[in-house]
Image (cartoon, rainbow, N blue to C red):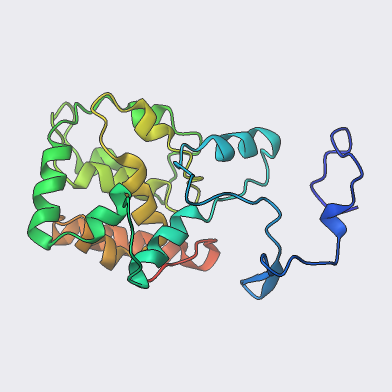
Length: 225
């Protein structure tokens, strides 16, 4: 019996152990191992609400899966595909540097630093070797210095984020926090600094050093755009 199977819920259908692989859904190599995705999602209809991730977290608290929808959206930009209804992530990638700066300034200045995005995050935990928000962001400063506050918050869960979107769902200002997590999760920091411009060099170096320390144990997959 494959690992991580809930014996009380297993119907014994045998699909998990089937060897007749669907030609339209071939195995994918990830970190040297072949995986078959047996959960089929219609990517054209997916609105990335995060319900599948939340359900997976409930069913598998120790071994959460991650959707590959965001990765597909990065690949569409990389491959210069025609996108009829681009997501916010894809719209931002298509902006000029000045357009990005204006966009994020308009978003971040709405932040009241309520910390709801942190309090509601299922994986946010202060770590001794993590990024200390209090060191960089003055207490009570509203709006907080941007993009410093939001990038530090995002990198605190750089390798543990399950992209559930609870941070964005909680935000009273409707700042696209999920999109920030998508960038941080899938892009190298240098590219994130281009997509979300305005970070001072000292803070950049702090994030780069943090990512470097975590790199050896990271489970992340980097996308090219």
